[in-house]
Length: 243
Image (cartoon, rainbow, N blue to C red; front, top):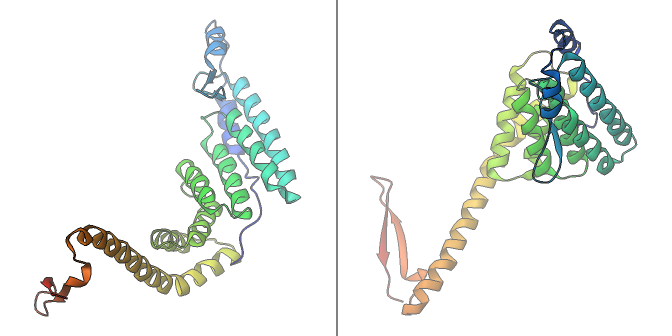
Protein backbone atom coordinates (compact mmCIF):
# COMPACT_ATOMS: atom_id res chain seq x y z
CA UNK A 1 0.00 0.00 0.00
CA UNK A 2 1.36 3.39 -1.01
CA UNK A 3 1.57 6.00 1.72
CA UNK A 4 0.71 9.63 1.10
CA UNK A 5 3.89 11.69 1.15
CA UNK A 6 3.09 15.36 0.73
CA UNK A 7 2.69 17.84 3.54
CA UNK A 8 0.05 20.55 3.50
CA UNK A 9 0.16 24.26 2.70
CA UNK A 10 -3.58 24.83 3.03
CA UNK A 11 -4.93 28.26 2.26
CA UNK A 12 -6.28 30.02 5.35
CA UNK A 13 -7.04 33.39 3.82
CA UNK A 14 -10.54 33.23 5.28
CA UNK A 15 -9.05 33.10 8.78
CA UNK A 16 -6.76 36.02 7.99
CA UNK A 17 -9.70 38.10 6.81
CA UNK A 18 -11.53 37.31 10.02
CA UNK A 19 -8.52 38.42 12.02
CA UNK A 20 -8.25 41.71 10.15
CA UNK A 21 -11.97 42.40 10.51
CA UNK A 22 -11.68 42.04 14.27
CA UNK A 23 -9.01 44.74 14.71
CA UNK A 24 -9.74 47.12 17.57
CA UNK A 25 -7.87 50.03 19.19
CA UNK A 26 -5.17 49.06 21.69
CA UNK A 27 -6.24 49.87 25.22
CA UNK A 28 -4.47 49.95 28.56
CA UNK A 29 -5.25 46.23 28.94
CA UNK A 30 -2.62 45.50 26.28
CA UNK A 31 0.04 45.48 29.02
CA UNK A 32 -1.90 42.77 30.81
CA UNK A 33 -2.14 40.82 27.57
CA UNK A 34 1.65 40.82 27.24
CA UNK A 35 1.92 39.34 30.72
CA UNK A 36 -0.70 36.66 30.03
CA UNK A 37 0.06 35.47 26.56
CA UNK A 38 3.08 33.27 27.31
CA UNK A 39 2.47 30.42 29.72
CA UNK A 40 4.93 27.65 30.45
CA UNK A 41 3.96 24.06 31.07
CA UNK A 42 5.77 21.83 33.57
CA UNK A 43 8.51 21.07 31.03
CA UNK A 44 9.20 24.75 30.43
CA UNK A 45 7.66 24.82 26.94
CA UNK A 46 5.79 28.01 26.10
CA UNK A 47 2.27 27.74 24.71
CA UNK A 48 0.54 30.82 23.40
CA UNK A 49 -3.01 31.62 24.45
CA UNK A 50 -4.70 33.72 21.80
CA UNK A 51 -7.95 34.67 23.49
CA UNK A 52 -6.67 38.07 24.66
CA UNK A 53 -4.48 38.90 21.66
CA UNK A 54 -4.65 42.03 19.60
CA UNK A 55 -5.11 41.24 15.89
CA UNK A 56 -1.53 42.38 15.25
CA UNK A 57 -0.14 39.92 17.79
CA UNK A 58 -2.27 37.15 16.35
CA UNK A 59 -1.00 37.73 12.83
CA UNK A 60 2.60 37.95 14.03
CA UNK A 61 2.40 34.57 15.77
CA UNK A 62 0.69 32.93 12.80
CA UNK A 63 3.47 34.25 10.56
CA UNK A 64 6.13 32.93 12.95
CA UNK A 65 4.45 29.52 13.03
CA UNK A 66 4.43 29.40 9.23
CA UNK A 67 8.16 30.02 9.15
CA UNK A 68 8.67 26.90 11.25
CA UNK A 69 6.32 25.03 8.93
CA UNK A 70 8.32 26.22 5.92
CA UNK A 71 11.52 24.80 7.45
CA UNK A 72 9.72 21.56 8.22
CA UNK A 73 8.47 21.31 4.64
CA UNK A 74 12.02 21.75 3.33
CA UNK A 75 13.26 18.90 5.53
CA UNK A 76 10.30 16.76 4.47
CA UNK A 77 10.93 17.41 0.78
CA UNK A 78 14.49 16.11 1.20
CA UNK A 79 13.33 13.00 3.06
CA UNK A 80 14.62 14.19 6.44
CA UNK A 81 11.45 13.39 8.34
CA UNK A 82 13.05 13.23 11.78
CA UNK A 83 14.27 16.83 11.47
CA UNK A 84 10.95 17.98 10.03
CA UNK A 85 8.98 16.88 13.08
CA UNK A 86 10.56 19.36 15.57
CA UNK A 87 9.89 22.22 13.16
CA UNK A 88 6.21 21.37 12.98
CA UNK A 89 6.16 20.97 16.76
CA UNK A 90 7.64 24.46 17.11
CA UNK A 91 4.93 25.75 14.81
CA UNK A 92 2.33 24.21 17.12
CA UNK A 93 3.99 25.79 20.14
CA UNK A 94 3.79 29.25 18.58
CA UNK A 95 0.50 29.01 16.70
CA UNK A 96 -2.44 30.54 18.62
CA UNK A 97 -5.35 28.34 19.63
CA UNK A 98 -7.69 30.78 17.87
CA UNK A 99 -6.76 29.30 14.47
CA UNK A 100 -7.60 25.58 14.85
CA UNK A 101 -7.42 24.77 11.15
CA UNK A 102 -3.89 26.16 10.99
CA UNK A 103 -2.93 24.01 13.97
CA UNK A 104 -4.59 21.00 12.33
CA UNK A 105 -2.18 21.38 9.40
CA UNK A 106 0.83 21.08 11.71
CA UNK A 107 -0.57 17.99 13.44
CA UNK A 108 -1.31 16.54 10.01
CA UNK A 109 2.23 17.19 8.80
CA UNK A 110 3.66 15.48 11.87
CA UNK A 111 1.40 12.51 11.11
CA UNK A 112 2.79 12.42 7.56
CA UNK A 113 6.34 12.32 8.93
CA UNK A 114 5.55 9.45 11.27
CA UNK A 115 3.94 7.52 8.42
CA UNK A 116 7.12 7.84 6.39
CA UNK A 117 9.15 6.72 9.41
CA UNK A 118 6.76 3.77 9.92
CA UNK A 119 5.83 5.03 13.38
CA UNK A 120 2.22 4.05 12.86
CA UNK A 121 0.90 4.54 16.37
CA UNK A 122 2.33 8.07 16.52
CA UNK A 123 0.97 8.78 13.03
CA UNK A 124 -2.50 7.67 14.10
CA UNK A 125 -2.40 9.78 17.27
CA UNK A 126 -1.21 12.92 15.47
CA UNK A 127 -3.84 12.47 12.77
CA UNK A 128 -6.51 12.13 15.46
CA UNK A 129 -5.31 15.38 17.04
CA UNK A 130 -5.63 17.13 13.69
CA UNK A 131 -9.12 15.73 13.12
CA UNK A 132 -10.28 16.97 16.50
CA UNK A 133 -9.50 20.47 15.23
CA UNK A 134 -10.75 19.95 11.68
CA UNK A 135 -13.04 16.89 11.34
CA UNK A 136 -13.34 17.32 7.55
CA UNK A 137 -9.59 17.28 6.92
CA UNK A 138 -9.63 14.68 4.13
CA UNK A 139 -5.87 14.18 3.76
CA UNK A 140 -5.43 13.52 7.45
CA UNK A 141 -8.41 11.16 7.63
CA UNK A 142 -6.69 9.13 4.93
CA UNK A 143 -3.42 9.18 6.88
CA UNK A 144 -5.15 7.91 10.01
CA UNK A 145 -6.82 5.14 8.01
CA UNK A 146 -3.46 4.12 6.54
CA UNK A 147 -1.75 4.18 9.93
CA UNK A 148 -4.47 2.07 11.54
CA UNK A 149 -4.31 -0.40 8.68
CA UNK A 150 -0.57 -0.79 9.17
CA UNK A 151 -1.02 -1.44 12.91
CA UNK A 152 -2.96 -4.55 11.85
CA UNK A 153 -4.86 -5.29 15.06
CA UNK A 154 -8.55 -6.18 15.01
CA UNK A 155 -9.43 -2.82 16.54
CA UNK A 156 -7.14 -0.75 14.31
CA UNK A 157 -8.28 -2.52 11.12
CA UNK A 158 -11.91 -1.92 12.10
CA UNK A 159 -11.15 1.77 12.73
CA UNK A 160 -9.32 1.99 9.41
CA UNK A 161 -12.32 0.60 7.51
CA UNK A 162 -14.57 3.07 9.31
CA UNK A 163 -12.35 5.99 8.20
CA UNK A 164 -12.21 4.70 4.62
CA UNK A 165 -16.01 4.45 4.59
CA UNK A 166 -16.25 8.03 5.87
CA UNK A 167 -13.88 9.18 3.13
CA UNK A 168 -15.84 7.29 0.49
CA UNK A 169 -18.98 9.19 1.46
CA UNK A 170 -17.29 12.53 0.79
CA UNK A 171 -17.36 14.12 -2.60
CA UNK A 172 -14.50 15.55 -4.61
CA UNK A 173 -11.90 12.93 -3.67
CA UNK A 174 -8.70 12.79 -5.70
CA UNK A 175 -8.00 9.61 -7.71
CA UNK A 176 -5.43 8.29 -5.21
CA UNK A 177 -7.85 8.55 -2.28
CA UNK A 178 -10.65 6.92 -4.29
CA UNK A 179 -8.36 4.00 -5.15
CA UNK A 180 -7.35 3.59 -1.52
CA UNK A 181 -11.00 3.53 -0.44
CA UNK A 182 -11.91 0.98 -3.11
CA UNK A 183 -8.97 -1.23 -2.18
CA UNK A 184 -9.85 -1.06 1.51
CA UNK A 185 -13.48 -2.00 0.86
CA UNK A 186 -12.30 -5.14 -0.93
CA UNK A 187 -9.52 -6.26 1.40
CA UNK A 188 -10.23 -5.08 4.92
CA UNK A 189 -13.41 -7.04 5.78
CA UNK A 190 -11.64 -10.40 5.32
CA UNK A 191 -8.52 -9.11 7.10
CA UNK A 192 -10.64 -7.96 10.04
CA UNK A 193 -12.34 -11.36 10.31
CA UNK A 194 -9.03 -13.20 10.10
CA UNK A 195 -7.41 -10.95 12.71
CA UNK A 196 -10.39 -11.37 15.05
CA UNK A 197 -10.02 -15.16 14.92
CA UNK A 198 -6.28 -14.88 15.45
CA UNK A 199 -6.61 -12.64 18.48
CA UNK A 200 -9.35 -14.84 19.89
CA UNK A 201 -7.08 -17.88 19.64
CA UNK A 202 -4.24 -15.98 21.28
CA UNK A 203 -6.51 -14.89 24.11
CA UNK A 204 -7.79 -18.45 24.65
CA UNK A 205 -4.21 -19.71 24.69
CA UNK A 206 -3.27 -17.21 27.38
CA UNK A 207 -6.34 -18.10 29.43
CA UNK A 208 -5.50 -21.78 29.12
CA UNK A 209 -1.94 -21.17 30.31
CA UNK A 210 -3.25 -19.20 33.27
CA UNK A 211 -5.78 -21.93 34.06
CA UNK A 212 -3.14 -24.64 33.93
CA UNK A 213 -0.95 -22.64 36.31
CA UNK A 214 -3.75 -22.37 38.86
CA UNK A 215 -5.19 -25.87 38.41
CA UNK A 216 -1.73 -27.44 38.51
CA UNK A 217 -1.64 -26.74 42.24
CA UNK A 218 -4.48 -29.27 42.60
CA UNK A 219 -3.09 -31.86 40.20
CA UNK A 220 -5.48 -30.78 37.44
CA UNK A 221 -5.30 -28.99 34.10
CA UNK A 222 -7.70 -27.41 31.67
CA UNK A 223 -7.75 -30.75 29.84
CA UNK A 224 -9.92 -32.00 32.72
CA UNK A 225 -12.66 -29.66 31.60
CA UNK A 226 -14.50 -29.77 28.30
CA UNK A 227 -16.86 -27.23 26.79
CA UNK A 228 -19.93 -28.58 25.05
CA UNK A 229 -22.27 -26.28 23.18
CA UNK A 230 -25.99 -26.63 23.66
CA UNK A 231 -27.48 -26.86 20.13
CA UNK A 232 -30.74 -25.30 21.29
CA UNK A 233 -29.56 -22.32 23.32
CA UNK A 234 -26.12 -21.84 21.81
CA UNK A 235 -24.67 -21.66 25.32
CA UNK A 236 -21.87 -23.82 26.69
CA UNK A 237 -21.74 -26.40 29.45
CA UNK A 238 -18.54 -27.29 31.30
CA UNK A 239 -18.03 -31.01 31.89
CA UNK A 240 -15.36 -32.51 34.15
CA UNK A 241 -13.29 -35.30 32.59
CA UNK A 242 -11.15 -37.49 34.82
CA UNK A 243 -7.84 -38.08 33.03
